[in-house]
Length: 400
Image (cartoon, rainbow, N blue to C red; front, side, top):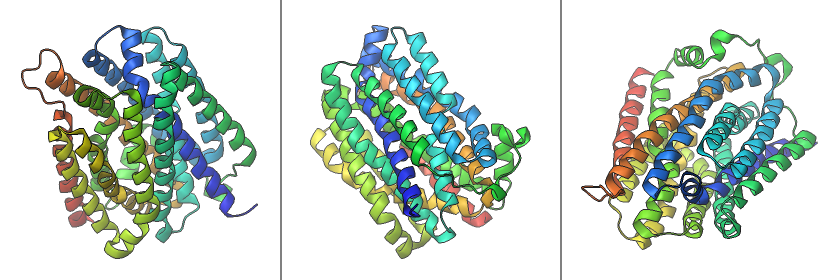
């Protein structure tokens, strides 16, 4: 088997994972309004609750699954996660109550380990100086999925609100079958280590990884970065619908534009950026750029300018794989799964915080009772959080 084939397979899994997520994004506001019988502002709050339930489970189980992949390998973890993902989409397609949607999100969150395990796989097959670029390739594959997913999701919505969920379920199941036959294992037996609960639970894993030299403040930076950036996936459909009266198709198109340029930045710009500026400066440029763009969206009132800025916003993402590479190089080879589990838990913790807070802020400044009409307020709050990420990243250099 070609040495490139496993890399192509794992990148395909990342892409299809994103396609499944992207397919359902444009129709979530309409599905929640349909099932709950509420207005858009209340549907946004329900969306925050569902996302938070998913994230709490991912927070609790991320390090456990990461440690399981360090013990048993990446391949079985990814295959099981894909099967459960297919079942989760099917439950959401059939749901007729908010409680059933909630159960589906809880089950999905428990096994939402696909992308974190993809990143551990990439760390396994990459040398130290290759990691940032290959992490960028994985993010690019994810971005390509976001190009295809939302665009098709918006089109599939024309055949019914639930159609994208059925398609996402089929896509995840087909990927699991294909992975079973063509995906090879990346973690060699000699690098596997015993599974210990003291390191597998989220708090033990944070303690184990966080006490490594120069890692703790980088983890804090990573967390605040995620808190700020998750605002896009949480608020964007509601923001576009409220401020510009965008249809699901238009929401899908805007996400596809972002995904196209995000994939380009990750696949093409990461390597030359790091060669030109180095890891740390690339991270800093990305953080500052993201902060500026969040402020722009906070005050945006013109749909044309928003669409024109999306490609530029995507280029600031080059800092993220550089931050992941810095973290990966400070962790032993036999703990890469544990690290990715910790990072997945940080993403989950951010996803717990962001939807609950940002959807409430959105409802407060866009609902019928809003005293000040400002649908972009969540983006301004996220810009402040990005400032915190910049502060902690600067401090990490002093402590390294």
